[in-house]
Structures are given as C-alpha cells and as structure tokens.
Length: 509
Image (cartoon, rainbow, N blue to C red; front, side):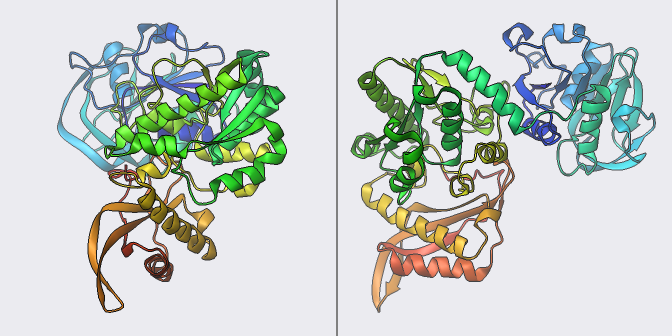
C-alpha cells in the first residue's frame, strides 16, 4: 500500500481518492504520529507527505517521525510536504515575496519519472505563501512557475520527490498522471486492489478479531450499515445478530423496507427495536446540532447495550463507519480542524462495554457500493442516497418534535418520489428536505397562513468531501414545491439551497 501522512490539508482525502482510483490501497495517518504507533509497515511501497496550513519554520509546526527518512522508501512531498523535505535534508524555506494561489503554468526543466508523459509546460493548482530559497543536499530543481523558482525538486538516487502545487485536485489536469507516476514508476506498485481482494482480506481480519464470540450489528437499512452487515455475516454467519433501531427520526417506511429486504437473509437474527419514544424524550428541547448528534450516538449504544445484555455474551458491535466520517471527525485528522462529529465516530461514549467492528472504516462511499455489488446486495439498497446517522433530527432545524418530524417525513418522501419520477435519482448524490425553525406568511384559499418553511437540498458529489448544488430542471423543482405545499399540512413555502461544499456542508446541521 501507499502510506499518506496528513499535515492538515483539506485536500488530503483527495490524494487517497486518486490512489484508490488507480486500484492501489492507501491509508491516511496524522503526519506527526510516531511510526511505532502505526499498523505494520509491511507492504508499504511509498510515503506521501500531504500539504498543510503551517509553515515549517514555525515553532509548533507538525513534523513527521524522523524514522521515515531511514526506511529506504520512496517519498513524495506535496506543498507543505515538499517544504518538510527541504528543511529536513539541508534546504531552506522562507516566506514568499509573492504568494501563489490558483492556476499557474508549470515549466518542467528536469525530466524524471514523476513527470513521465507530462508536457514541459502544463497548468497546475498552487496554494502557498512559503517557498524554497535553497535546494536540499543532493536535489535538483525539476520545475518552476512564474512566482515559484522551485516548484518541484527531486533526488532520483534516494527516490525523494517534491512538488509545490497540488496534483490531487481536478484543477491540475495532469495531476492524476503525476500521482500515478509516483505510485507505479517510482514505487513499483501494481493495480492489485479491488473489492474482491478487499472482501478476502476483511473476512480474515474480522474472523481474527472476533474469533468464536457473538457480534451485534447496528442495521439502519442504508447503504453503509447494510454492506457492513452482509460482509460480517459472510465472515461469521450466525454469530451475528442485527438490530434495527426505530429511533423516531427515520424516513417514511424505513422499518417496513428493512423487514422486507433483510428478514429472509437474517431470519430470527434480525431484531426490530422500537425505541422512538426513548430517543424523542432525550431530544426534547435540544436545539444545538452537536448535542443532537451526541445524544443520538449515546442512545444508540445504550439501546445496543440493553439488547446485548438480554442476548448475553455479546462482545462486539458492528458499525458502518466510512473513511469520510473518520476524516471529518477527530480520529485520523491530526493537525486539521474538526468539521463536525459523526455519531459513528465522535458521538460514541468514551467507555463502551462492546468493542467496535468497523469493516468499512477505510472505504469511500462509491467503494462501499462496489463492495455491496460484489456481495450481491439488492440495487434498491445500494443506490439509495446517503442518510445521516442522526437521521432527520439534524434535518429538523431547532427543536425536534413528532409534529415537525411528521411534516418533514412527508415532504422528504415527495422529494424522493419526484426525483425518481424525473429519472435523475441515481445521478444525484443526495436529495432531501429540511424543515427550518421559522414560519412565514402565506395565503391559501383567500385566507392568511403562518406556517413552516421547507428547504430542498439536492447536490452532486463523488465522495461527499466536496459537493455542488444540482441544476435540476425547473419543472421538477416546481412540481416538488407544488406538491409539498398542497399535500403537506403545515407548509406554505419551499426554498432551494444553492450552496456549495465547502464553504457549506451537505447537511444543514
């Protein structure tokens, strides 16, 4: 695999995406984590040092473990990563006279394996305020731009390369080729990672972790938990019991759908737990989104603990945690800022009686769908849009009540029906409704109304790390709005969210 050390760049996950797309496995670790704290380095063919917001000459700047330089592995530094290489190996970094943000023209002056198949002049995406003022010992300047004299450096003897630009973003048109050149030409990797090999490896890992002990799975009926449940079941069979928790903040018809799809597969090992009153009582009066997430995360674990005690001798809990969940929370991100906690990651209590089994922890959503296809999970499950762990509690802005949830459920169902009817459901990443904590004046049947506002959030994305609002046909938006206002009592206005991620997130809370 390729090891990525993260120094805080918001683009780090894109490096991982590009490597996975090349059918090579990779993992992200905090850049300053000691090598001894990482999993076995066996099979690692190269190391990538990510970008980051720090300056290497700052007092508390993050640095990698010194031992990485002695491993004899190829190293590729991106932006801040290149500056780390320079400072460590005898070069010098200082604040640039002219900062460089956005598109720049790269002039390649020293061809090497990194730039194989790349024209001598090529556009790249820059984002830096520091630059190299002196080459490190044994290195050559490989490229420059108008404002960056050393935009790429290389030591082909030690197989250490650095670039000041970001090859992982789509604004660098040939960035994917540069990354693949490092993976295949420099590191000698092979395109050997796919879902079939992942299943084999993960089954071995699950069996090794669990042994003959019993396992409980949190099955929501969404893509992630469904794929996790089927994969773990494939590994340990009847040792697995799945629990579907009706927490009162689910979509319309969710419980019935889960019974229909998974009842025949898991039989008596599928338990339907009605805990809606328990959850809604805990959420009463709560308006802060982080508190909602924490409450739901804690209550999930409490419900599972209760059932585990009744079932007896349950030692493990399966969750469908994905890599973006981990990246956006506190577990992996190292120097980067926490964006929000996820109930699968940040919402868990510090002390848990059960140990976690997270077979999808290092996968992105599109990879999970490929995995589900390999496991022969029905397409009606695999093509479903992502649904947050805290459910509609974070789509009811403000206080969560049964009345507001019922309004939202009906509106959300209309959104899905019309998107599917228009034939664009599978082209979109997510399409859902949000009920706002405000009311507006309207008129219905010559009478004044003062009712709720529903917002539509419909986005396109590849992995949820970035997203753009979907330019769906006006007639579809019009039909959705018309149906919600006419069919859902308590709503007199519908608005459309046209924010990108970043700066906004996909969910409103």
